[in-house]
Amino acid sequence: MRGKMWMFHSADDSKCLFSIWKQCLYCAAVACLLFAPVRTNDACPASCICARESGTVTCRDGEDTEVPGDIPKWTSTLILKGQNISTLQRGAFMTNGTELEIMTLSLSYNGIRAIETDAFLGIPRLHLLDLSHNQLESISAEAFHGLSELRSLYLNYSILPSVAAQLSNALSARSLRNLHRLELAGNQLKSIPLMRLDIYNLHALVLVNNSIETLGRENVTNLYQQRRIRVYLSLNPFRCNCELEAFYYWLKNSSQCPDAGRLLCSEPEDKRGSPVEKLRVDCMNENLEAVSYVFLGIVLALIGVVFLMVLYLNRGGIKRWLNNIREACRDQMEVYHYRYEQDSDPRLANVAV
Image 1 (tube, one colour):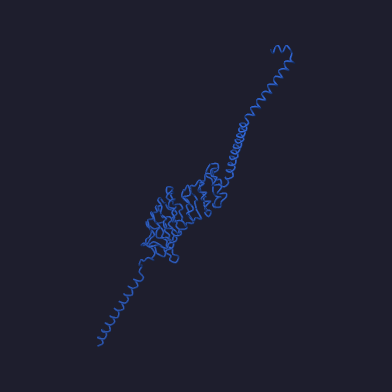
Image 2 (cartoon, rainbow, N blue to C red):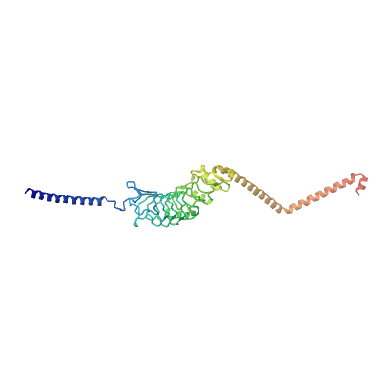
């Protein structure tokens, strides 16, 4: 009897253990489903670091050749650095055809060589775009299309000399009408790559360390009309000659160049290293001397013309006056000749005859 009871209890215990085991397996499966790293639109892209509290996504030193396609919707600051992105294609920052809320985008040191049309489509609220330290060989005329809220654009050490004309076309886009700061340092530019300044809301234009030798009269006139702009021009090889009168005058009478005291001459050789501002007086003195000589020549020419006019208008009287003088001289000579004949020795008179 006891044996049968023991066997009965043993069977019941087995069923109980089996039931507990099933429940444990079920809980483990639910836990795996709940805590498994499922990819969603709000998840952090692979090889990136995300800080949702600040809205920042940072992707560094990867081998990706394209912009990550799974950028979270909550991203406000996106930093891509050290990637192998050679081309920014159309809509590169759109995720499944939806727009992102990115306001700051840093793409420096990515080896970018080309920017296609509508490359920044999908991030219309972008305020700051940093494309510094790339090697841009091609820029579409509509590369910055759709960035109507862009305030700051950094293109330092990124533009090859052959792309200057393309850059000028891209920057002339009406979509950049709210641009406040434009940095173009270290790009070997020979002039300001902006066709017009009045289409922007520029407050700062950085052209440091380029190949600018002078600012033409047209550029200076445009800067006078846009008084709010501050232009930074240090570390440029200025050619200091007296043909730069408009530029010198702008430096002297305007506060639009905060680093004017650091502008140095590169040519000619005898003025190399001299501050550009100190050469204004020399040029002004040379100009004044040239003007004084021109004025003197004009005055002398006017006096000559007046003298000739007087002679012409009084030609009749002058002719009579000259005839009178001639007659008077003739009469006087006859008197002297008569006296000479009367007072001279007869022998001398014979000799004279």
